[in-house]
Length: 68
Image (cartoon, rainbow, N blue to C red):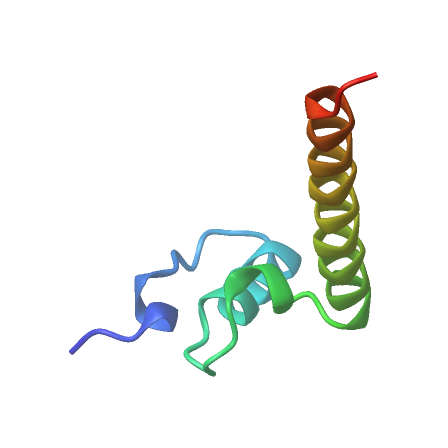
């Protein structure tokens, strides 16, 4: 079995190589959370805002369905 680190070309700049190793590591985290605490905050904010948007959409549809 080939590990992700073995697939990375040695010709890449060191910073890019380290980033690729970090994001390709098999540590059980999804890729959108491997960036650290900022990614967790960004993901949580995105989920929260999607939930608010869904609730507001449901409220709008409900208000349109009521008789005046």
